[in-house]
Length: 342
Image (cartoon, rainbow, N blue to C red; front, side, top):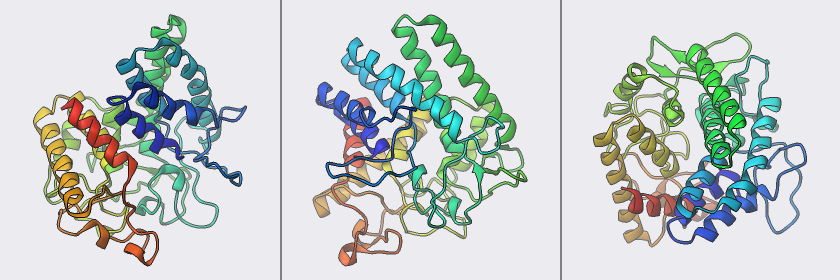
């Protein structure tokens, strides 16, 4: 049971079975430690303790589940644990104390499985950075905690969470916006050097309503460029014109959970035509390969030409090891969500 996988599972289940959707969230919260930390995963067997968590999107998923099911008791049971988790992140993922957060990278070499983007080129060089996606998720979670607090009658706390969300959003705009490139980018902790490879993470500030309309339009100029991100099947996790772009996992392939969050962001900013095109292309690709292979997959070819079985996962293809995982839960979950929310 993985943290952010479970959140996306709830996003789909809420349209089919409200109790199951709530259980997806509550099961993860049941793993929380006394200091607020939520581990990256849990399983029926005993797992070795790990220092890693995963993307903080549980409040977003819990709020959407509450809006669908309307059970106040569920909301009340989620609220304080989710507050504690955000406080833990603020205390433990700010490497230089500047208010911006960075993923904890893997202890055994380059990579940051904590981010969910395991083998992304963002983590090839094992350098401590403030990361666009983590900070954007936390802004969105804080804003959502404000909504939760208001729904629970905790009006002072609602104001506090919204104020903290605004403050972190302002910091993202101040320090992680690269004016020359017109993108939000990761930035090194020690010397402020930019990580200039264009990835789908650049657009996640829109998920948290961080950019103003002018900056959102500059992001859209990149997103809708067929040579960068508006491929036959958008949105590649690395821009198609980058030297590091490949067909291996988070180094280019399309992940439908990222597409779902991007779709929501486009609708938030009024880009309804592009949102509709992204939804249609995503659902069509899921259906196409389901009809051929009888399953959903972890990730898909941005040109929608390669069979998912033929795409490597950290260098492994198909049954030679654990290649592109089939029957993948969040691909199915966001398909159900799109089918009910379009």
